[in-house]
Length: 422
Ligand SMILES: Nc1nc2c(ncn2[C@@H]2O[C@H](COP(=O)(O)OP(=O)(O)OP(=O)(O)O)[C@@H](O)[C@H]2O)c(=O)[nH]1
Ligand SMILES: [Mg+2]
Image (cartoon, rainbow, N blue to C red; front, side, top):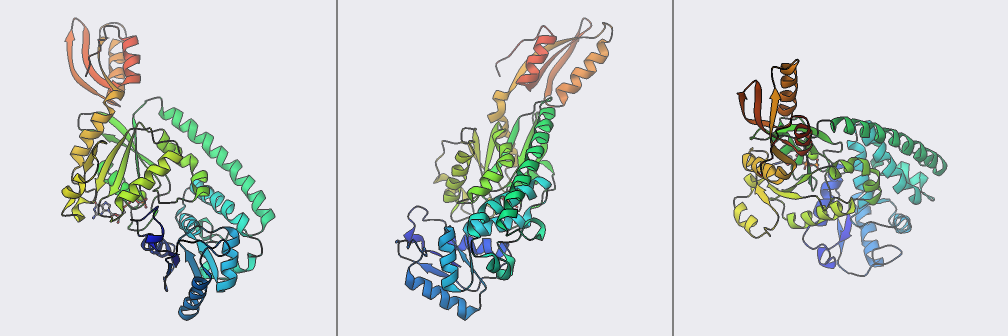
């Protein structure tokens, strides 16, 4: 592993990026044989690292018998080639290793295609004169396609494959849209879980909804979005979506390729920004999550900070107090299921704007009246709650709390509706 020392990177001082790179390497299935760090700030355009450092790297590689060098910084295709020549082994950069992990993780058809799209886009400019080296060394890391399939390394064939993938993704996208529109028939507010990879988003979804999403103490356990219903304690029903985790410098081809998946985030009325309070670099992690949210155009969606893993931090209250409080936040342990009631309360408060209290008058004894009553009550229960109901003069007068959309529909149909200002 090679990289820059933190002091040479004032732009991101507090995440130990080499430590994170090690996690990335292990997640990709590599064994770390050694690491070399450069302290100087000057970047050598040909090799990225200074000439002396390159020699040092080559020596470490020789000594340890390493067959792959992973660089913490993103390298240009030219720098990669030059380094490979000078060191005598294959070199992949941070984006390359992240793409490789995504390839290993991809499962759904859409996930597989999106990852392959990102990988090929990334690979194309890096191919010149390297076909041989790509397939030979380093246990294939960086050239594995989704599902251990080998990536195409012929430029012409890559181009035609890219066209095919884009076409198929378009199809998937429109069928998802149809699906979403159908879901829109009963409009439930959507809450999206966002956060740095490994923050505990999937664990939280499981804890809240009894879902069974795969969780793991490695990076990027989740690639495909999962949505589950959650009934808040006051009876309101919402949807919670878990999706792919972020990382600092999420490779751009990946963000591009995953736009469709990330769109799920843009559909949400509220973001739960899950933070691993136990991670020493959590403040930096929060900033990079914010960066990705801006990139995908989701930074205006109201957010609730959910500080997780409090069970690992005996001093979590102090940690929490040091942090700016202008954004609503809660402290939880998703694993121990602590703080979840408070979290649900807070979600309810923040979503209150999306609900409305109305009074409806349902005629009971007109022809078909009971059927109408049953149908409307079913619709109300499917997303909201009946606060009280009285039967007066062959009518049911019910005060209900439902989404604004349903409230509007009910008001239009069942006349005597009055809006209260809850
Ligand atoms: N101690 C402790 N561990 C937790 C808590 N929440 C999650 N974890 C652990 O943290 C690791 C990551 O959890 P995940 O739920 O997979 O994290 P994620 O945010 O979904 O990660 P990606 O899908 O990789 O982005 C797992 O090993 C969890 O068991 C918590 O409250 N306390
Ligand atoms: Mg996950």
